[in-house]
Image (cartoon, rainbow, N blue to C red; front, top):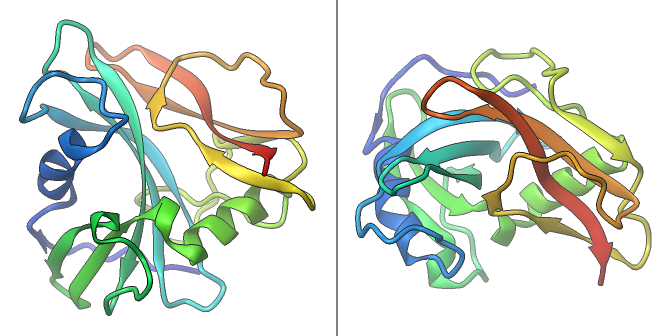
Length: 192
């Protein structure tokens, strides 16, 4: 099980994401500098214990209406080979572990393998900020991805749990800036 360290990261994850998010094609805001707040999320464990895996839900409050985003992230102790340059969100100095290379999780094979395992019921979502604590609010409906199916990550989130045409969907919650709690589909098994 992954240990959550109570320490500093410089720059912080939110600082890195504030610079990275507006450069993404799926960014729905119009602000060059979004006003990001952490709104929810969870973690998964890497069976090998080498990669930190976090699914952070962020809300950008810079526009007329807030927009929620999912940022799956991989925390590594060394650069990840074979991924595009834009997969790197940035590097940060962790107070306990040293330099961390933080990658967009959709480009990290360990993150995507564990997300697939979660959708198949073979992994347990963990609380975002408490070590060794399952998060029962993160749920999977159905089972998948099986052979011939891939995992699709929803980046801009909508507050709906409406069933998708998918053998399995991942549902979790977040809070809007006014404190309203909502739930939505974060990922789903999809045809290749």
